[in-house]
Length: 111
Image (cartoon, rainbow, N blue to C red):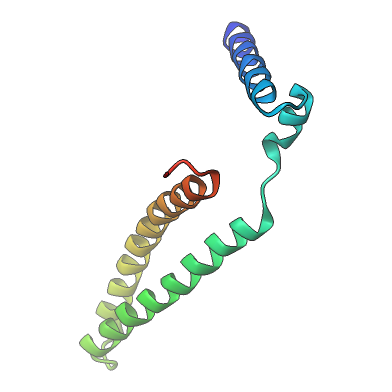
């Protein structure tokens, strides 16, 4: 495990040195920025995906509530649980893709 950590550290040092050289800054400045993210970008990703999730869930849950009778709630509850699990899994996947896409745009990789 120590060899892997050392190899990673060596690779990261080389990458930071190359980025620093390309941008005319110190490698320590590049390393310090590794964990800093712009709040506005993260907030916009969370807010847009949150609003979209609420709208989609509202439509789907409304359909389930209209589909099942209220006097026999067991099938409706089971359907809501299953749909909730599926929507959660899909939401995580969409979050990953949406975050990746925003990062590509933000860093100018899509041009």
